[in-house]
Image (cartoon, rainbow, N blue to C red):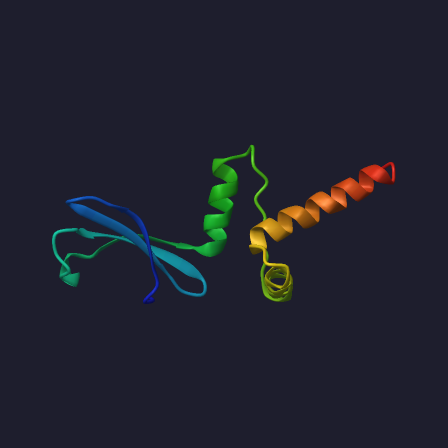
Length: 106
């Protein structure tokens, strides 16, 4: 899938990680005592869209939003210009919008 790995958990016996490509994530499990890739066992693969829906379903008390395409690019570059993480920039932008609406009496 990719050389990028996100390690989910690891102890003395089992290592679990995810690898992603443009459209999906694949989760693996392997014996932590060896680097032999023959012990790598794919557990499941999920599209990124399905994962977003799963997270939203799994915690209905949250509002989950994701950005893609040009809007994501603009968000990332604007956040970088002011030295913020894109997630924090989006939170502050939404907060400013809400506050402006309240001040306008809406």
